[in-house]
Image (cartoon, one colour):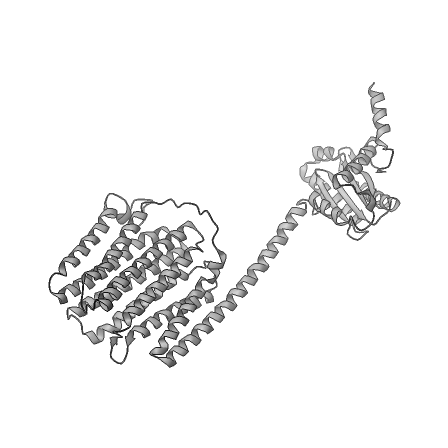
Length: 512
């Protein structure tokens, strides 16, 4: 039983058992046994070598399982695909060892051996290229079909159905070429890793595929083709050693649970185009297949092109949907940052933007509106009532803004509003502002013992004024101060000399 917080594979990477260190040692001992057996009978040694391959590939699959246990979603699936591909490889070499020792008939065994190797290629390729956690089901199906088609090509290129045997002259070269393709694909995919966990997965997978390229070169190219060993040789131990190296690296990595932050953002182009690499590989191996099965090769290339075209169409469609969603989100965000949440009027940002756009279109009026006795309304009737007062006044001011094109009502904060009236001269602007003031008075909104009224400060700007937004706000604010000083519930227009100066003098005299 696992203790709370432990994974189902704690026996391998933690707890009281030191198998984290022992497991690679056991595999290394197996490699040593395989090497010693090569001094004896070549046929027996060949079988032992294949069995050591099967055992170490199975060991590689076992150390992938704790990584799958620690992940979720699409990344867990990719770890499981990786492990499944390794199990298929182990099964293929198990059959090869049994065939070598005469435990199964060669003619029946070869097809199963090559089929397992082909399925292994498909699983490894799908583990590399299955990127999209939010991809449509159809896109995932197309990716899976391309990977299975790659495995079918592997099968057709190395197995002759007429003789039920391998193409002895070419199958080792093709196997090496497939290993190189998988290594290059995994290394390219690493540039598009979208998270530290995904980067670690692709690094380990790339290390495994790189080690297989080395092993294939030594065991196939050097031993089989250059030195002409028909059975096993010392060079064949390379496969077992490379597998043991992967097991050691993977088990060592299980010690570290903390994943470092990525220093760079993933390459979007790589993530979008990686599945297309499978199509290119299928086309390349399909053209190679012309040497053996011309008509079959043409059919496979056509199927590959059709699957690629369908996936491209789906990708473009998904990109279009995502682009529209992004634009809609941007519009919603823009609305949120330019609209007052309580009243639905604009805010200071939207007011400044509107004033900037009106600079080249003639005169415009800017009014600042302050709610008189708003504190008494809050104190006597509560803040919810105060919110309703602000909403009602905002509705009146927004209606007043509609008397002229591009008019705007904005809430600047608290009980202060602004009214932008483009194209109006001072007299017209004052008339609109006064009508709004009287309309608010007629509502008779309660404010303690009295009713709500508004004071309005108004300024009109011309193109030639060239005042910045803050300068216009200052003028309107001075006019508003004048309106409040003269008794409130009125509209005052800013002009030279500033009427607020006399009010200040009276205040100072009264104070003296």
